[in-house]
Amino acid sequence: MRTVYGPRRPGGADLFVHFEKASAGATQRQPGPGECAWVDRALRDSEPAKLQFTSDEQFISRLDITGTLKFKIVGVVGKDLKYLLDAVTSGDLFYVRCRNTREELTITQVGP
Image: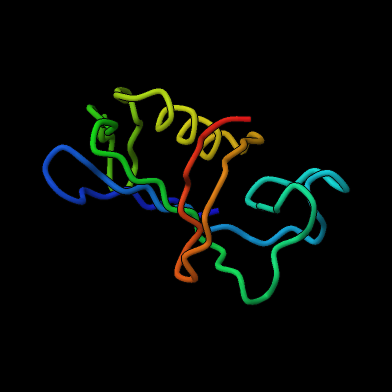
């Protein structure tokens, strides 16, 4: 799973999560680290393997940079963004509801 976070405009940002498609729906087999699936089925070949979370009020407030391409997120404003970043960086299971825009799966709700 690859995560990209970047400023979108003042006061807001986008979080993109690129993932592998699980071979079965999440109720048939729990997706492994780096995988995503719909609850009832695997993603189709035609569906994007990228999640997008957009918020005007949630953002990373502090990064500690320790070397070339090494950093630690130490400040996050917003519970949804924190939930996503914690899950993605630890490889834990997480839940989102999405809308398929054909370019990405836009997150509309975070959490179970």
